[in-house]
Image 1 (cartoon, rainbow, N blue to C red):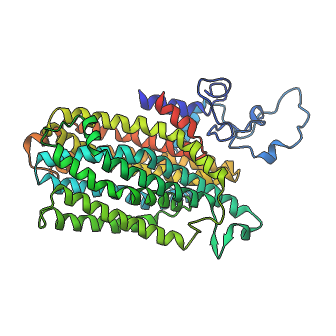
Image 2 (image 1 turned 90 degrees about the horizontal axis):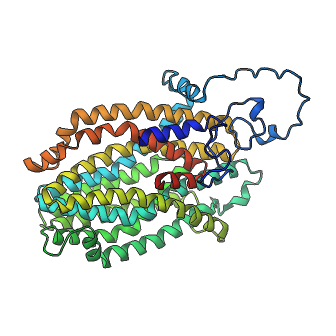
Image 3 (image 1 turned 30 degrees about the vertical axis):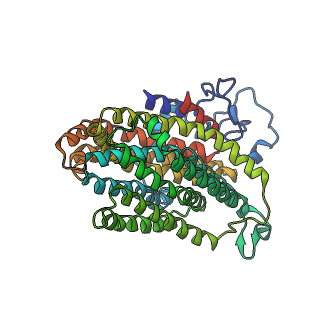
Length: 486
């Protein structure tokens, strides 16, 4: 039902009469940034939100209308939903735009997969310590994700769009020197994002370390639970990695805005490799257990942040000569909208983890395996979303509406072509993947019971993630937030 509602809403944007925001609606709408795509006919020639009609065309004087309006040329009269599926049916061809999308998405997919893979590595090593330790790490990771990603995900998405828009506007500016300082670009969105990231990271570290006991109680892990000790130990050490995580995400958002997804890939790849090496050394030979897994992750996160900041410093001024308070205000306004959306998303995942934890270590361990595999594979389609976001933000900010329209359809086509193969792959290989984490028969039985959900949700994830990226690309954070909360 959720997938049907999401697709129906997007398709309604191709029909003016049925557009949910055409007149009054219970959800407020940012009319200056809309994905509304309307046929290029005389009926809609005055629309300020059409991606087919540029502002220059809208200002042209109207010609006297004849008694019989001429039939629009090359404008299909079919239902807009049918028109969309006709485009999607056009043989999933990879044209020049498709290649550009993939050139951004493929490195990003590898980078996005690296973080869950690092968690998978931790989970696999910790799983050999025992089911109690595996379940404890699952609880701690869920808490860390809830606290950190509550602010990190909005910051990442907003930075990507703002940097892409600023970069596009600067490229059209006649005076490029106005945006340079000592041979480097000056982008207020970059310095603002990094400053906010530093503050958020420190705040998150304090909350996670000082409030670890309170957070365990919220998750339903009492003091007498066998999971309490290792879970609190892992979370306390993991808290020291909050600042580099947020700063690295802000830097990644900047590189994404530049359409450069290879640099983050190299940095994250180096960090993931270091994490795996340190896991082998710290968990078993040194006997640090779950604490060793946390320390290994934290050290790798600092390495990633250092590499990204070093590379970014060669391109832009990390600290702007002057503060653009209007940009700060935009970050807070847009971020506030997406924080509500992130609360809904992470709250659902955390509730599921809490319910599983209350069932005991065996159920929690099986649930943790399902979640890790689901996240690792699902986030691959998120790469398409960020590719569409960066390209759409660039073209939309330059009023290149025709190209923006092409970006939308191309990303949707590739998303559909990605979701179904992922579902088949997981359905066939889920049992083998689960065996990488543990040899406990009871835990594996619980994990295998989630095969249909983990595999079957992939096509829905592909479309949902792509649509999110498109809304972010036109800075329509309001609808993206309210649609999740509604």
